[in-house]
Image 1 (tube, rainbow, N blue to C red):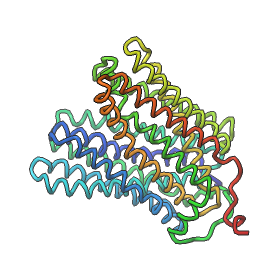
Image 2: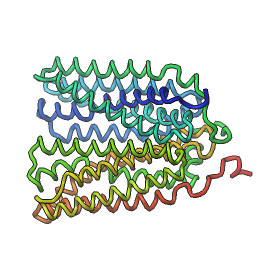
Image 3: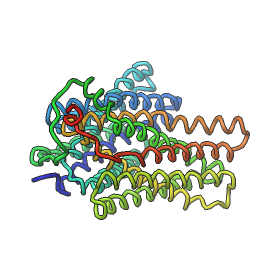
Image 4: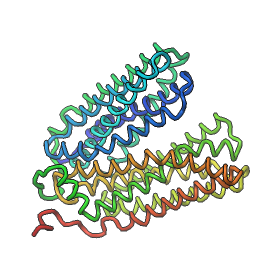
Length: 433
């Protein structure tokens, strides 16, 4: 079999869903339990989540390891196992917080180091495997399917875990966490079994010689397309992540939404994301064949559309009640979905642009850029609103400023995206000739 079948792509999507389920547990559910049930300062879980992003700077190293080893499945399974262990350790640290705060903090730091390493090893090599084994025409749909299944994993886990935790008790938390990580790890074992062994890599050029990690990184950074794409990923994901901590407070402060209403607004945004992903998945595969040049167009349109939607929200911040907030938020979600999936599709196309054997390190480099952006994006957005409210003495102008900055970042990302892959990048062999 040459390339992955749709069934195999869906199976690998279940691995991404499993990864999303455990990440939701440790970055969302445990975050809430630490702050609400155990009355810890919100800065503690926020710092731990930021630390797990910092650990993901190791992504290029994990990708290079699978490039040299020839097989990515052991890295995927090993990464998921590391993530599962980290999830259990983080849960135990949370349960220890009331009685042994110092020991709990030390265990939590170690746990989130495991979580960051597990996400880096599993996520990087999963994308590298899909990029290596998926035919070009199927990559947009593969990216969409993978990310949709990740969202499904997050939503299902959040719903089931939330219902099982009511009423809260330490025993229930331990049971739910154990169930989530066990199910995720077992599903990964079943879903990934045998796929890599039966599939033949698609032709992305000549096989490149194995080199040490530092040489592989230097070689990747010497490629103008890889450098530009790294800057693009950081810029776009910074804008993408800034809204996470801002949108629901914006609805409450500027429009008087209740917590339930703001949560419904967030659901509307995610529905828009889903529609955007489906559009790129179907349109990118059916009408453009998944070509890198076509993905560049989708990425650019997604970024420009996201900037437009954020511009509308900035205007809404000044207008206040009476502004059609729900359609603007759904438009933002739709354009975010177009951008996110097309960016992953472009990433898959560019991963093997210089030949076979560098997909992992290139995916790792772009994953590290994304991790940095996500690590600081939410913080910058929230702090920007706080500073704006303090200096301007009003909510509307503060949110106007933050949304405007996000829109400008998306426009900057679009200007970078439009220059990507305008001409084929020479292979390493050709460059040395």
